[in-house]
Amino acid sequence: MTPALDLLKKVRAEHRVHSYEHDPKAASYGLEAAEKLGLEPAQVFKTLLASSEKGELLVAVVPVVGSLDLKALAHAAGVKKVEMADPAAAQRSTGYLLGGISPLGQKKRLRTFIDKSAEGFATVFVSAGRRGLEVELAPGVLAEHTQAQFAAVGRV
Image (cartoon, rainbow, N blue to C red; front, side, top):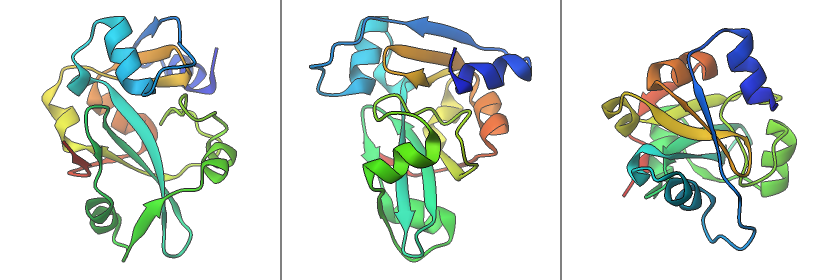
């Protein structure tokens, strides 16, 4: 079990867990998950951390087929500028290893933004807190349990 799955179980949120054999040589953790689980890549989301000019860490959940639009995230968060967070700081803050960072069950509650495209799916897939482990849940359930807001922060 991971903190993400423990949280979902504790609050009795509807979700399904999917696992696959992670290949350490995979170039993209998210695309690997989509491929190995036979999923539409646009429905699989990666969790990225960015840092504002004031050092605030922000969580962005965007489709694995695209990238994070840093300007859009800064706008959504109401800050001047953001850059990708230092990987060590991301791991320290979330309690997860890179490639397995889940938006759920993080050590510290960070402001979270989910790309608006998630609202177009009945369910989305995000990391369950470990490489090779994904959790499927409704976008609204994800937003509720991460206290996230939907914003156009992804770019294809």
